[in-house]
Amino acid sequence: MRLTPRDTKYFDLLAASAQHLVRGASLLAELLGADRAGREKLAEEMHDVEHLADEATHSIMRRLNQTFVTPFDREDISGLASALDDCMDEMDEAAELIVLYKLDALPDRVSEQVQVLQRCAELTADAMPRLRSMDKLADYWVEVNRLENQADKLHRKLLAQLFDDFAGDPVQLMKLKEIVEVLENAADSFEKVANMVETIALKES
Image (cartoon, rainbow, N blue to C red; front, side):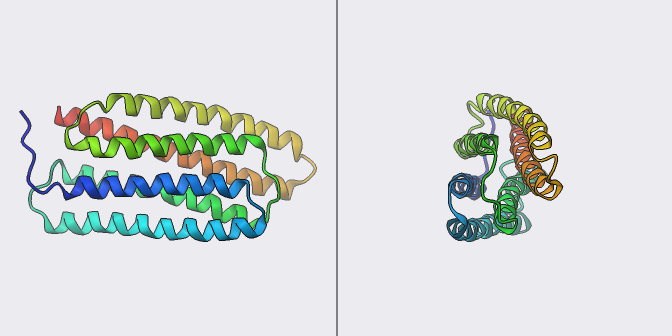
């Protein structure tokens, strides 16, 4: 039987951090369908959520410096908090680039990329509270790994499409390619979170 220390605030903080990802992914999806003015407003909202996510990460780090006994390895808590923050940073960067580059239309597969991120965010937010018991987490990391593989395929198809559609417009190609790459990085970051959860669960089993 695994004994859990009384200080379980870490679980609440990690769960709160993951909820910011759900909001961030939702804002990113809204931003894709908005006009330029709407995109600017949504990007500002996204940046606000990114700040909240940063604060959640800082709260975890401060608590680690003040707590002698942690629910599981402090290196794992620190790594997981940072990995969650990376997911938010990537989505925030994608939103900012779409606004800065003043793009009108984006390829349909970009929306598919964001849909994958939304699902990853939902699964991550659902999984974080279960770290308390380490119960039924395997389905989470298996599904996120599957989604990341789906994101990889979308990424490859998008790159091929961009080189076909914008061969005569290298500037537009460069802008779109950078956004597509950042979204792929976000999917990779979600997979990293899932892999860390798997490692923690195996350690604690």
